Length: 420
Image 1 (cartoon, rainbow, N blue to C red):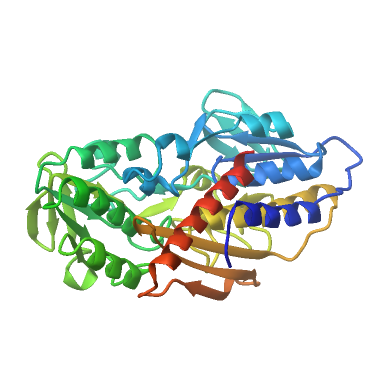
Image 2 (cartoon, helix red, strand yellow):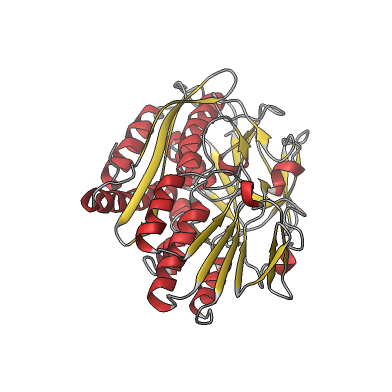
């Protein structure tokens, strides 16, 4: 399937039409609270408010006034996007749909009283609660690193200031220096993301610091789009990138932020930059709400409702839902299913069978775009993959350029779907 802004929004329009014409409850307006204003939360809030035509009070709790998308943040590192291109605000959600946007941290959930506590004081009541808090990091996942070291060894896996910091470090790296990445174990946000980042860093270094080296310490034996990335690294950045996988000790890693060293399977290396991407878990509010089991929040595939509480829904990266990867596209797709279900539960409007889709695009070098994706359906056990597709090695330059241009159209479409 080919995506551009028009086709993406056209598909969204079909869903919007299907969700229209709600049945109003006899008594006061039902209340939906959404925690997290990313691809899952912003989309869910927008669709519920828009398609209920004012019959549901929607509150969106998000601490950041400006949201930087993690998707496309790697392109900022290489200069293919400006920081302003991946920055978005919530004004249109309030102005166009009457969403009550609260810029604060959600710090607690009382499931009995059905309230969400705010860091600034007070609480917000709900009839249905949607949690889309993204990811946090597992404590102690990388020996020697915690978030207090993120300025010396940035993760840059929550876009914004960390992304700016990593870019500044790359641009200032000494001639012939070493860039190291500690890659995360599965599952994690955006499976191709670390390897697109390596590609974008290599793009910068090839132009500005061609004798520099890149080391990847990876606890996995393989990774998303592996053949495509390795082909691209060989074609564009020959001899620059050294991937050390599980079989070669890539999972036996420690770091020393003060000394700027990385130790891989007992061998210590002095580095100039170390991008540590730790193991991940659901954003902390999901755990505080009591809807996690281990690191993630199990949900029912049909509506993304929590298996711990039928009045709480969990979207995107934080959810444990089955076969879908943790991506912005996935969160947006899940949000529309959830919005349909929540509106149906609160107003009696028709609920349609859940269907999901995802595509992840990656840029390897200028106009060298690749993608992987699939469609999914809800089963009693999980969100299950129906079919899929992936770019092939050896594709011609025109197809790769078209794939990259398709990703630009998708980005315009999804961010409009979230924020306009």
